[in-house]
Amino acid sequence: MTPSGRRPAVTVCVPTFNGARHLRQCLESILRQTFSDFEVLVVDDQSGDGTLEIAQEYAKEDSRIRVAANDRNIRMVQNWNRCMELANGEWIKFVFQDDFIEPDCLKMMVQESRGSRLVRVCERNIVFDGVSADVQKLYEKHRARWSIRQIFLGLTDISAEAFCRAVRKYVGVNFIGEPTAVILHREVFRRFGGFNSNLIQLCDLEYWIRVGIHTGFTYIPKVLAAFRVHDEGATLVNRSERYYRTRLIDPLILMHDLAYSPAFEPLRRGDFGVAGFGLRRKLAKIAYKARRVAESAAADPSHPDSRSLEEWRRTLARYPSLEKSLYYHFVRFREYFKGDFWRSRWQSHNHRRKS
Image (cartoon, rainbow, N blue to C red; front, side):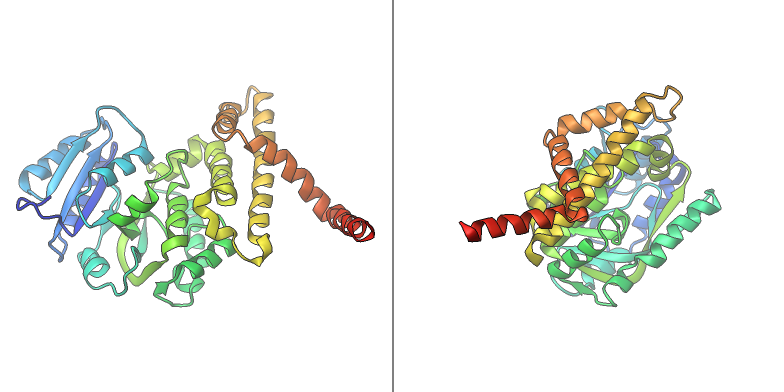
């Protein structure tokens, strides 16, 4: 709250962990905002590189900055949720420790954004900092192929129904972007909860889908934020050190929830259940591959990701229906594509007619 007891319009959340390298630029960009009704909340997750000291230094100089330090390391996604729990603002704006925002970011996203959507998304630049040409090409290809402007044909007010159609068409693709490009009303947190801590890489995508299929979003076609890609960032570290977890288990958990969780029911409506059938089919294929890779890794002592089988078993323990679902749907989908599925349906139909 402000000193007068009033809730600020925006809480800018900066979750930190060993981010001293870029934190000053991040905080400076926030403090230079042309919109003044905001607080800055830094929540440090047991950094060991001076990150907390930098945040406290800024807090002494500017009363708008609050600093909280976790008693223990709770990891990235849980720290995002901790930020949302401690935020006082009507709107919650994440700016990661590596990133920065333009001076008019808050003004454009809060004050001048039209419509009543609870989620608002802006364009963002990608800043490449010491990464390979292959990594740059991967990000640039993604941005060129799956941009909000192209997918929604220049619309700025995106309904929940339009968002559902886009998710079905581009399932598994994060066309919204990173949290630094998004602002959320606090009502979103109350209605839909926080980020899914079972995920380590697709946590933002899962949240955008879980919320967007119910609320839609407002698109602001202006670059107001910058997302930094560097070799110490969580995305690249996870991809290099936890390949199996990020490339198979995270998509498996996401697809399981899209196919079965009540929170994603709007995705499975209409078209005589075809959307739900497609999601279950994708789930079965990912699950089959994840199990096969894990078993192969366990049989090969030289495999680079020795934790694969452990990750697979942990996922099965968390989602006990997964193995049964995997077997059932994998068999049914094989029958479907052979023609056996429709042949059995036709035979059953004829049997009922004769009886």
